[in-house]
Image (cartoon, rainbow, N blue to C red):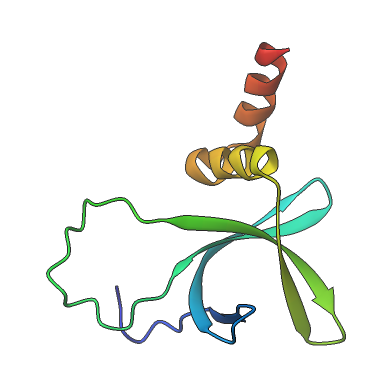
Length: 103
C-alpha cells in the first residue's frame, strides 16, 4: 500500500464509550442506497501478520446526515451476505442471477 494514499477512517463509539476505528475499503450503490465495506483499522501493519489471512469485514448502510456528515447503520445478515457477494465479485448482475436460481 502506498503510504501517501489517504485512508477513509470512521470512528464508532459503543455503549460503554469505547472507540473503534474502522477503515472503509469500498463503497457500493445498491437498490437506491449506499453501502460501505469496512474493516477494523490497524495502525501498525508491521506486526508480522500473515497477509493471506482473511480479514474480518462489516457492511453498513451509509445515510447522509446534514450537509457534510454521514451515519453508518448496520444491515441485516441476509442483506449483508448479498452485498458481500457483490463486493467480492464486483458484478451485480451475477448476484441477481444467483437470487433467481434460489427461488
